[in-house]
Amino acid sequence: MTGVLKIANRVLLGLVGLLLLALGGSVLAVGLGVDPPSWWIHDGRHDVLLSDADRTRWRDDGWWWPVVVAVLALTVLLALWWLIAVLRRRRLTEVPVDTGDGEGALLRGRALEDALAAEAGALEGVRSARAALGGRRGAPEVRVRLLLEPHAAPGETLHRLTTEPLAHARDSAGLPSLPAEVHLRAVGHRPERVT
Image: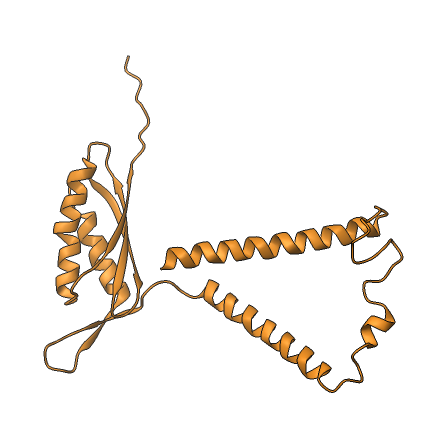
């Protein structure tokens, strides 16, 4: 679902950007003396976008100003909602844990990330590991980044990661499942000159 939202966000941002660029660029071009096509919104360099007649056409109608204010307010609210959605933290701060007594507890997301990264970093062939918890409180997901030593076997490391650190994290938090996205990267080493 988040992938679809990312794509929709990028497409919408791209379309808005292209529209603003085309509109602003064409107004600038006409202002610099380029002759606009006959269907364009203004005719030349000294023409205004809105004439006095256009600006005052609906002034005497009672519905005009409430509609203008409502549309502008809705536009501002949608822009703020979009900004908050883009800037919102994607990390999960806590995970509910069923303690069996009906009360439950909250596990800090950072603690689970640190424990998972420490256990994954201790696997043979792993130089360093990072984990980030995402998703929803009731259905967390984890992203793990492993930096592998040159001699490490990626398949074996991935198998051990899923059967040891990820399984331990899932079981310790009492989760039915813990979907994971794992990124493996090998350490680049410089070749040594042999003489």
